Length: 186
Image (cartoon, rainbow, N blue to C red; front, side, top):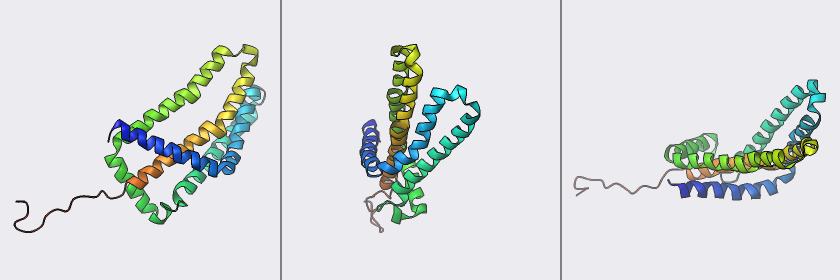
């Protein structure tokens, strides 16, 4: 349980996530469309539509919950490797991984934090520093709209991939047989 095994888990989950994202592109983009449009409108014209803003935020939150549900359903419940295990066995395997893989989980948090810094904080800082004031609202609208079907949706897929890897590797550990009998052990 080292930094390298945590990074390997993250990389494996990301590679799987790219394949999953491409395979389910239309579902992911379709469910990301509501937050995409809502974020563009909220940033661009939100101050002119205060009554619609609260309802749109609720709709955006609900669509993200639905997106996460669909991703988890496709990635875990309907997966040919994990689906047959059943819900209780999947939870048990996940729990077993958590008990013996705490460092890998910490590494996932660090990698996710680094991704947040690179894909959210730095682009927002770039817009604030390099985009002219009169264009900033439009550029920010486009930026937050682009992040919904890409960065946010892929983060959901990637974290589902992490959970998937944790479940797959959380099965019973192979242990050496213990000697039995009165003269066992020497």
